[in-house]
Amino acid sequence: MPASEQDLSALLDTLGIAHVTHRHAPVFTVAESQELRGVLPGGHAKNLFLKDKKDRYLLAVVDEARRVDLKALGKAPGLAVDRLSFASAERLAEVLGISPGSVTPFALINARGRRDLTVALDAALMRHNPLNFHPLHNAATTAIAADNLIAFIRHCGFAPIVLDFDAL
Image 1 (tube, rainbow, N blue to C red):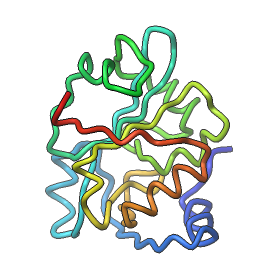
Image 2: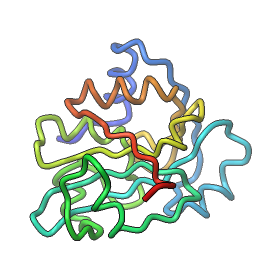
Image 3: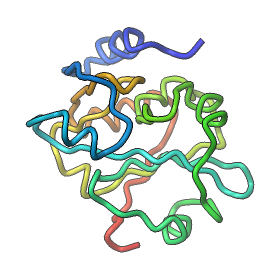
């Protein structure tokens, strides 16, 4: 059974990670999120769940305004992926335990032990504090500090790669 928002909140509390969650109507796109959120301080992301031709996965967490060249991303230093494309809703549910519109680095709570998943973080996004992400569903936004995001990702068993997307 995939983790719930309550499970996520409990884990963040256990790890000593401060977090604040804001409720809102469900949003499915960056544009909807921007329109609805009003003024939530910090960095806002779009989260891309991708796969390559060898069925390896990449969760790319990038600034919401960034355009991502999948071909260039696949060749980024430290990534062992080739021919990236968006993963299906079925793969998203299988690997991260969430549905489309809810992609978030917090879903790594459901992916512990996966050796076929890499996490890439946008260096520009990581300069913001706090960072805002869906808490496993798209009807809320949870804010945490950038260094706490990295601590959370590491706790889930992943070594995030921080990339300068401007250099890709």
